[in-house]
Image 1: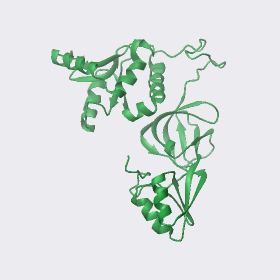
Image 2: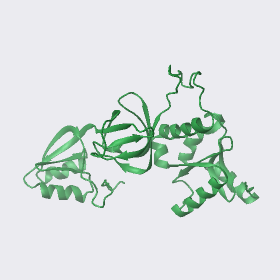
Image 3: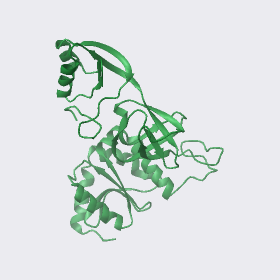
Image 4: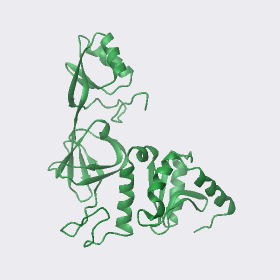
Length: 285
């Protein structure tokens, strides 16, 4: 490995003193060998500085969205160089860390258990017990999605709200009680009837969960739908009604337009984005 010069060491020292909020959360979980291996924060790797690095595991954890301000091209070159030094790179977005830190840690633990220190089948796990079968209850992993109509014979199912059906990496519990680790190549919008494909070939059916919605009826649904779309609000369109998530501003606007509004509890499957992305987003996104 290329040894860092004094300038790199000084820069790394400065970065350690100014961790981002996301990096600070991750460091609290990695420090003092809490995952069984030693990690260093803001560690030089040649011309680059890895957010978190473990020589024991030959693993680098990168946190995107902080102070790097890197482009995709720069990220690709950075990852290529670090991997050329023998490291595996796991990259997480700030939002993943803030919203699903457990899922991020599960991903890291899964890598460590597989590559560094898999638990002995006869020993209890850190959390408690060992299974009678001699296998650990490590989470199943899903890295692919099969769309509705392209699969059959599910091994289980999972109930997800509309917001929960937009994900990339997350730890979930399925109907059998097992833990499922989602690790998709990119953030994906899931629909009722799609399925997670586990690495062992099993399929887990995705069920749209009931949630509190606003039912919209009126004499001119086309006009009401136009106003909803103008606010970039996800909307489920049916022949005689519209459905949206609760939003008091949109509710008041529709009431002023003469809409007939009612609270309902139903699965929410709004119209997909017009450009093929599967989602529409409000201005807050």
